[in-house]
Structure formats: structure tokens, C-alpha cells
Image 1 (cartoon, rainbow, N blue to C red):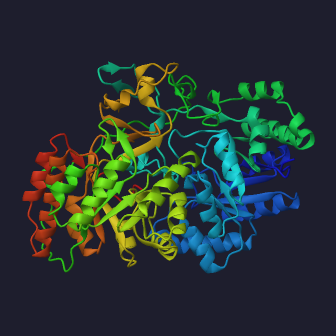
Image 2: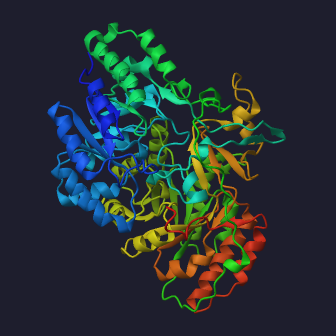
Image 3: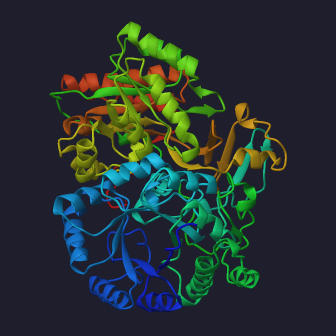
Length: 634
């Protein structure tokens, strides 16, 4: 016997759509206002505040529920209006808030609001430990990561208490949710703020060593359809089945809602005797936009989940963007003497780099628990122990950083690593996800927050500080103006100023696809061959693979915020981080020396261009400050 209190949750972007999906059998509807939600590219969609009030009344009259998406990341100048908006949503008695930014949870608690909080899929919740963390913050429901397998969902359900919601049908992003910075880093249009340019839907050439595949849509995930697997999901513990499509019309959505309504009703009635309705499945297939797949429900996605030929890809009016390169004339002389100098923080991936930098006055080193290919960047456990022992011998401060992605299948490994770390004298453990954070605080560890936590405003920063993080790294999407506002709040904030920029992380092994051996055992080409996506402008995005075979796609140019050192120093950034884990040792030493020289100049009231010119010569293929200076773009 399993839970038969099942919810069918439908999207609505317009009033007539809300009426249609309610009449078609949805138990609840999720919708967004004209502000503060993830679907902001089409102004003719979403609900005014008065329409939200009417929607709540309309649905409540039918004993149905309205959940409102408050699922963006928010910047400092939006927080006052956001607070007023949350008051309004309480007043009109909506039934739940769908939340990405922890700032909303902080405001919710300080205001004493009683609207149930649902963790958005954008939080990337993929472990039972993360669910427990959210339970401690007062959340009542979690919308699980779309990247989870059925086995992982079942395991999470067995080890947590919150209601579990899962997407059953609709669009799929190729990236792990909440960790796709592609659109914002290349064009200043943040996916985490509802403005994604969909670079995953562009055409690329895929290159592996000397092999080059024809142009195709190698990141264009086909649509999710879990209709044939509803019984297994119910048995695994999913209680709410969510249909994607707030920008879809009523004719498309009504077909979906009727089919899923009928299926869930039959599951409630028949339970284990339930069989999938083949006719209804065929009707869904005929109504499809892209081809269907079950995503990662049965394991990591393969290339057959991708619409490589683009034949069913809807038109989206964007195109590749040229990454803006830094030039000599970008340097601006300034007269400023810094009262205090931020620490330099350097992430390293081998013992030789530590030895070269030991006398460079590094605030602390970052030793990551991930290992990347090709090049074997990172540490085996034996190498990590040697590095920690070396730091202790030399009196060097260091932290150990957990991976950016931790799913239920990774959790036991992370727990074991955290347990083994207890024997060493690290300064802190840096966490990038809520599950690792939960496990770290259960062990009483000193904890720092990594950029993967997506902290970009003072209210979110205050919550993570109150919950035990000693300091945190601002998200890489934070623009210049918003970072200054965050620093002005007086929190201990670190800023990434140099290094490779990861645009997205996907479970799809593009390297295996490039090798053309999807039906054969993996020959681990990623150990030796460099792989790239090449866009229509000729820009190369390098693909690296971690130990779980997740692919990390990096921007063509490294980030450099050297020119912003005077302002970051004046704004009292706590630490300036260099992502040195993928640099050859000599390159890393030179980069650190350049930044140290710039900080030294500021300490005595100087700021000349010589170190900056050295930086440009070090990177003749170009470096970028991206969209950091452009507030309006984000």
C-alpha cells in the first residue's frame, strides 16, 4: 500500500489557460506574477496582482490550490519590493510559494508568513540530506531535481519527511538545474532570473581530438514524458506530478492534463493492477513538440535523448554571442590607497602548485574533492592527504571543497570523505550544495559556502550566515553593482576574480557521443583527448569530465577581474579567489604574482598598468571580464 493522495499540478501563464487546466482536472495550478518569477521573456504572459487574487479565489471555490512562483535569484535593489509582494501573496491566501533564492526563506521567516514554502527545482535538490536541510528551514515540499533516477527518488523518500514533487512532462534543460550560467556569462541574460537565451538550443560542432562531427544541436534535450512510468513514480514516493509549460496555450496543455488526470485516477483506484493506456500515450505523442524521452529516470542520459538534427526544435530568436575580450585600453589609472587588502584565495589541484605558491602570502588554499579529465586535474585521496599534510607542515591555511553537484548516488561517497577529513587540520569545509552543508554541520565542521549556493544578496547572505557559514563566495552571476551592494551589507564575502568559467554541467557524456560508441563500453577517451563544442562564431567551449562522467562545459576565455581590484578592495571584499585548478603550475604562479603586485600597489596608493599588460601577454588568446560591469544586462 502506498500514498494515494496524489496531486496533478498544472501550469498557467494566462487566465484562460488557468481555467482550462482546472476544468481538465488539475488539482492545483502554479503561476507567476508580472515580477519576481522565472518566465520573464514574454510580457503578455504571467498574472497581475489583481489576477492572482482572482485566480486564488477561482481555484479555492473548486477546492483547488494556487502556488505562486517566486523562483528567481534576486538582487539587492529588488528586496524591498519583494517583501511587499510576499505580504500581498499572504493576504490573498495563495497555497504555496515556489522558491529558489534563500533570501525568500529569510524574509518569510522574519515576516512571520504562514504560506507553505516549496523548494523550486532551480535549487537543484538531489539528496535526502538537502531535503532535511530544507525541512529545518521550514519548507514543506521539495520539487526534486529532474536529473534524479527512479532509484534515487525512492531512496530520498525513504530517508526524508517532506512532500516530494517531480516534473512528469515538458521541456528539459541539458544542465543540472540552478547551475547553468551559460546565458549569463556570455550575454548577461541569467537563466536563474528567467532571461535565458537558450544557448543549449544553438547549433555546435563537436570536436574530439582530430575527430570533428557535423554541426548539430548537441545540447538540445528532447522533451520529458513520464506518462508510461507514473506507477513506478508513485511507488517511489512522488506525491505531486508537475507539468511544465507556463508559456504554452490551453489547447496544448488540456490534452496533457486530461491524460495525466485519468492515469492518476486509475492508479488511485487500481494501484498495482494499473496499466498504461496505450491510446492515451499515442495521443500524447501526436501532441508532442519535441520527441519524448524519460530523461535520467533509468540512468544517465545518452545522445538519443538529444534532438541532434534539430528537426523538431521550436524557433527561438537568439544566436551565439561573441565573448568580449579585454584590451589594453580597458585599464583605468586610479589614485587610491587601500586601508586593508583582501586575502588571495587560490584553488590548486596538485602538490607542485602548493609548493610553488607557499611563500606567496596566500590567505588560504582550496583543495577540491572533485577530479577532472583530461589531465587528471584534482586529487586522489592519497594525493589529498599528502597535500593536507604538506600544508600543516608549512603552516599554510587550506579548506577542502565539496563538488558543485552532489546527487543521491554520490551522497555516501561524500559522507565517507567528510568522515575521513575529521583527522586533519583544515580551516574549513567549503560546500556548494545543501546536502553537503547538512552533512558538514552534522559533524560540527567549520563551513564556508561556495559559489554553487547562488548567494547574490544580503538577505540570502544573512540566512546562510545565521545557519552557520563563516563566509561565502558570491555567485558568478552577480554583476558589479549588485556585488558592491552585497559587500556593503558587512558580510564576509569572497569573489572569484580569475580562472576558467564553467557554463553548465550535464549528465550527458558528449565525449562518448563524439567518439561514436554509444553502444559500446566506454573507452574513456576523456582521459587523453581534449573535447570541444564549437559555435557558429568559431568559439571553442572545452568539455571536461568528472569522475561521475558528468560533463562540464567551459567558456572560451578565462575570467579576469584584475581591473576591478581597486573597487573590490575599496568595497572590502573579504577574499579574492583564483580558480587555478586547471592551470599549469607556471601559469598559475604568474597569475598569482600579477594579482599580488596589483594589491601591493593599492596598499601604497599606486595603480599602474604594468601588471595588467603582463596579464594580457600571458593570455594572447584573450581573457574577459564578461558582463560583470553591466548591471542592466542581468
